[in-house]
Length: 124
Length: 108
Image (cartoon, rainbow over all chains, first blue to last red; front, top):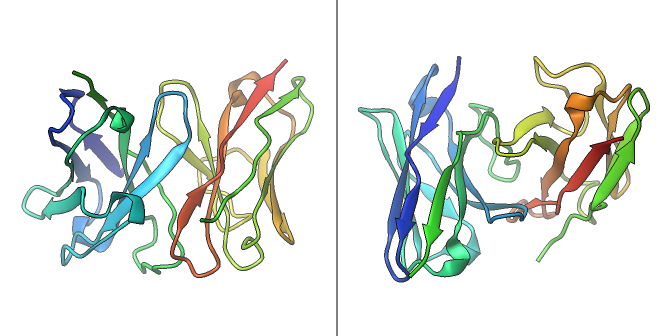
Protein backbone atom coordinates (compact mmCIF):
# COMPACT_ATOMS: atom_id res chain seq x y z
CA UNK A 1 0.00 0.00 0.00
CA UNK A 2 1.08 3.59 -0.54
CA UNK A 3 2.97 4.96 2.46
CA UNK A 4 4.56 8.31 3.14
CA UNK A 5 6.83 8.41 6.19
CA UNK A 6 8.15 11.76 7.34
CA UNK A 7 11.11 12.73 9.48
CA UNK A 8 10.80 13.60 13.14
CA UNK A 9 9.97 16.79 14.98
CA UNK A 10 12.35 19.73 14.82
CA UNK A 11 13.01 22.75 17.03
CA UNK A 12 14.68 25.69 15.36
CA UNK A 13 15.66 29.23 16.28
CA UNK A 14 14.34 32.23 14.35
CA UNK A 15 16.38 32.85 11.22
CA UNK A 16 17.45 29.22 10.87
CA UNK A 17 16.42 26.72 8.20
CA UNK A 18 14.68 23.36 8.48
CA UNK A 19 14.66 20.42 6.09
CA UNK A 20 11.85 17.86 6.34
CA UNK A 21 11.96 14.54 4.52
CA UNK A 22 9.17 12.32 3.19
CA UNK A 23 10.00 8.75 2.16
CA UNK A 24 7.54 7.13 -0.24
CA UNK A 25 6.87 3.42 -0.70
CA UNK A 26 4.29 1.15 -2.27
CA UNK A 27 4.25 2.76 -5.71
CA UNK A 28 6.48 4.02 -8.52
CA UNK A 29 8.01 7.13 -6.95
CA UNK A 30 8.65 9.01 -10.18
CA UNK A 31 5.10 8.60 -11.49
CA UNK A 32 3.29 10.83 -9.01
CA UNK A 33 3.81 14.45 -8.04
CA UNK A 34 4.18 15.30 -4.36
CA UNK A 35 2.72 18.28 -2.49
CA UNK A 36 3.63 19.95 0.79
CA UNK A 37 0.91 21.38 3.04
CA UNK A 38 1.29 22.93 6.48
CA UNK A 39 -1.01 23.49 9.44
CA UNK A 40 -0.28 25.96 12.23
CA UNK A 41 -1.47 24.98 15.72
CA UNK A 42 -5.27 25.12 15.89
CA UNK A 43 -5.45 26.52 12.37
CA UNK A 44 -6.41 25.35 8.89
CA UNK A 45 -4.46 23.83 6.03
CA UNK A 46 -2.15 25.83 3.77
CA UNK A 47 -0.67 24.60 0.46
CA UNK A 48 3.04 25.30 0.04
CA UNK A 49 3.96 23.80 -3.29
CA UNK A 50 4.55 20.75 -5.44
CA UNK A 51 7.45 18.79 -6.91
CA UNK A 52 7.63 16.42 -9.83
CA UNK A 53 9.80 13.55 -8.58
CA UNK A 54 10.60 12.52 -12.13
CA UNK A 55 12.35 15.65 -13.37
CA UNK A 56 12.56 17.65 -10.15
CA UNK A 57 10.53 20.61 -11.41
CA UNK A 58 8.73 22.59 -8.75
CA UNK A 59 5.96 25.12 -8.28
CA UNK A 60 5.64 27.11 -5.07
CA UNK A 61 2.79 29.11 -3.56
CA UNK A 62 3.50 32.80 -3.89
CA UNK A 63 3.63 33.22 -0.11
CA UNK A 64 6.67 30.93 0.15
CA UNK A 65 8.56 31.96 -2.99
CA UNK A 66 12.20 32.64 -2.12
CA UNK A 67 12.04 30.79 1.22
CA UNK A 68 11.08 27.24 0.26
CA UNK A 69 13.00 24.66 -1.72
CA UNK A 70 11.62 21.25 -2.64
CA UNK A 71 13.96 18.54 -3.85
CA UNK A 72 13.94 14.79 -4.35
CA UNK A 73 16.27 11.80 -4.28
CA UNK A 74 15.05 9.13 -6.66
CA UNK A 75 17.56 6.58 -5.32
CA UNK A 76 15.78 6.57 -1.95
CA UNK A 77 12.26 7.60 -3.09
CA UNK A 78 12.42 10.60 -0.81
CA UNK A 79 11.26 14.18 -1.24
CA UNK A 80 12.50 17.06 0.88
CA UNK A 81 11.09 20.44 1.85
CA UNK A 82 13.48 23.08 3.14
CA UNK A 83 12.17 26.33 4.61
CA UNK A 84 14.62 29.12 5.39
CA UNK A 85 14.58 32.35 7.41
CA UNK A 86 12.26 30.75 9.92
CA UNK A 87 10.05 32.92 12.12
CA UNK A 88 7.65 32.07 14.91
CA UNK A 89 4.72 32.09 12.46
CA UNK A 90 6.29 29.08 10.72
CA UNK A 91 5.60 26.90 13.74
CA UNK A 92 3.34 24.24 12.25
CA UNK A 93 2.89 20.62 11.30
CA UNK A 94 4.25 20.07 7.80
CA UNK A 95 2.71 17.33 5.67
CA UNK A 96 3.76 15.75 2.42
CA UNK A 97 0.82 14.48 0.37
CA UNK A 98 0.83 12.62 -2.92
CA UNK A 99 -1.05 13.84 -5.95
CA UNK A 100 -3.27 10.79 -6.59
CA UNK A 101 -3.47 10.98 -10.39
CA UNK A 102 -0.39 9.98 -12.41
CA UNK A 103 -1.69 12.21 -15.21
CA UNK A 104 -1.00 15.47 -13.41
CA UNK A 105 -3.06 18.49 -14.43
CA UNK A 106 -1.64 21.73 -13.09
CA UNK A 107 -5.01 23.40 -12.41
CA UNK A 108 -6.51 20.43 -10.55
CA UNK A 109 -4.54 19.70 -7.38
CA UNK A 110 -5.62 17.30 -4.67
CA UNK A 111 -4.02 15.13 -2.04
CA UNK A 112 -4.12 11.43 -1.18
CA UNK A 113 -2.59 9.96 0.88
CA UNK A 114 -0.85 12.20 3.40
CA UNK A 115 2.27 11.62 5.48
CA UNK A 116 1.95 11.54 9.24
CA UNK A 117 3.19 15.12 9.58
CA UNK A 118 6.30 16.71 11.06
CA UNK A 119 6.04 19.32 13.79
CA UNK A 120 8.44 22.21 13.32
CA UNK A 121 8.68 24.57 16.27
CA UNK A 122 10.40 27.92 15.84
CA UNK A 123 11.36 29.45 19.15
CA UNK A 124 14.21 31.45 20.61
CA UNK B 1 -6.76 36.08 -3.24
CA UNK B 2 -9.47 33.46 -3.45
CA UNK B 3 -11.42 32.10 -0.49
CA UNK B 4 -13.62 29.14 0.32
CA UNK B 5 -16.17 29.67 3.10
CA UNK B 6 -17.30 26.94 5.48
CA UNK B 7 -19.40 27.15 8.65
CA UNK B 8 -17.15 26.87 11.72
CA UNK B 9 -19.25 24.17 13.32
CA UNK B 10 -22.07 21.71 12.69
CA UNK B 11 -23.72 19.55 15.34
CA UNK B 12 -25.91 16.50 14.82
CA UNK B 13 -27.19 13.57 16.85
CA UNK B 14 -26.11 10.02 16.01
CA UNK B 15 -28.08 8.57 13.12
CA UNK B 16 -29.03 11.96 11.73
CA UNK B 17 -27.74 13.59 8.54
CA UNK B 18 -24.97 16.16 8.64
CA UNK B 19 -24.51 18.65 5.81
CA UNK B 20 -21.40 20.78 5.57
CA UNK B 21 -21.30 23.50 2.94
CA UNK B 22 -18.42 25.21 1.18
CA UNK B 23 -18.91 28.34 -0.91
CA UNK B 24 -16.63 29.92 -3.49
CA UNK B 25 -17.04 31.89 -6.69
CA UNK B 26 -14.96 29.49 -8.79
CA UNK B 27 -16.66 26.29 -7.67
CA UNK B 28 -18.79 26.09 -10.83
CA UNK B 29 -15.50 25.83 -12.79
CA UNK B 30 -13.25 23.86 -10.44
CA UNK B 31 -13.59 20.51 -8.73
CA UNK B 32 -13.97 20.40 -4.96
CA UNK B 33 -12.38 17.94 -2.57
CA UNK B 34 -13.18 17.08 1.05
CA UNK B 35 -10.83 15.92 3.79
CA UNK B 36 -11.57 14.55 7.26
CA UNK B 37 -9.10 15.29 10.04
CA UNK B 38 -9.32 13.78 13.50
CA UNK B 39 -7.32 15.25 16.40
CA UNK B 40 -3.63 14.55 16.14
CA UNK B 41 -3.98 12.82 12.77
CA UNK B 42 -3.26 13.70 9.16
CA UNK B 43 -6.16 14.60 6.87
CA UNK B 44 -7.88 11.83 4.92
CA UNK B 45 -9.56 12.32 1.54
CA UNK B 46 -13.28 11.46 1.76
CA UNK B 47 -14.66 12.98 -1.46
CA UNK B 48 -12.89 13.88 -4.71
CA UNK B 49 -14.02 15.66 -7.88
CA UNK B 50 -17.17 17.00 -6.19
CA UNK B 51 -18.94 13.70 -5.64
CA UNK B 52 -16.64 10.70 -6.04
CA UNK B 53 -15.88 8.54 -3.02
CA UNK B 54 -12.44 6.92 -2.65
CA UNK B 55 -12.25 3.21 -1.96
CA UNK B 56 -12.47 2.48 1.74
CA UNK B 57 -14.62 5.49 2.55
CA UNK B 58 -18.06 4.50 3.90
CA UNK B 59 -21.07 4.97 1.64
CA UNK B 60 -22.64 7.36 4.14
CA UNK B 61 -20.22 10.04 2.86
CA UNK B 62 -21.41 11.82 -0.29
CA UNK B 63 -20.72 15.06 -2.09
CA UNK B 64 -22.76 17.34 -4.32
CA UNK B 65 -22.40 20.62 -6.16
CA UNK B 66 -24.82 23.39 -6.99
CA UNK B 67 -23.60 26.67 -8.41
CA UNK B 68 -21.09 28.31 -6.10
CA UNK B 69 -21.71 25.87 -3.23
CA UNK B 70 -20.56 22.32 -2.69
CA UNK B 71 -21.90 20.13 0.10
CA UNK B 72 -20.52 17.20 2.03
CA UNK B 73 -23.33 15.02 3.34
CA UNK B 74 -22.86 12.36 6.00
CA UNK B 75 -25.94 10.18 6.30
CA UNK B 76 -26.55 8.21 9.48
CA UNK B 77 -23.78 10.00 11.36
CA UNK B 78 -21.75 7.87 13.75
CA UNK B 79 -19.70 8.93 16.74
CA UNK B 80 -16.51 8.11 14.82
CA UNK B 81 -17.38 10.81 12.25
CA UNK B 82 -16.68 13.56 14.77
CA UNK B 83 -13.80 15.47 13.20
CA UNK B 84 -12.78 18.60 11.34
CA UNK B 85 -13.75 18.67 7.67
CA UNK B 86 -11.97 20.80 5.08
CA UNK B 87 -13.04 21.58 1.53
CA UNK B 88 -10.33 22.31 -1.05
CA UNK B 89 -10.38 23.67 -4.55
CA UNK B 90 -8.70 26.28 -6.75
CA UNK B 91 -9.38 29.72 -8.17
CA UNK B 92 -10.86 29.98 -11.66
CA UNK B 93 -7.45 29.85 -13.34
CA UNK B 94 -6.23 26.97 -11.20
CA UNK B 95 -3.30 29.05 -9.96
CA UNK B 96 -4.23 29.16 -6.28
CA UNK B 97 -4.76 25.95 -4.30
CA UNK B 98 -7.15 26.91 -1.54
CA UNK B 99 -8.60 25.24 1.54
CA UNK B 100 -11.72 26.29 3.38
CA UNK B 101 -11.34 27.28 7.00
CA UNK B 102 -12.66 23.94 8.22
CA UNK B 103 -15.86 22.80 9.93
CA UNK B 104 -15.87 21.02 13.26
CA UNK B 105 -18.50 18.29 13.22
CA UNK B 106 -19.77 17.45 16.70
CA UNK B 107 -21.80 14.30 17.26
CA UNK B 108 -24.06 15.04 20.21
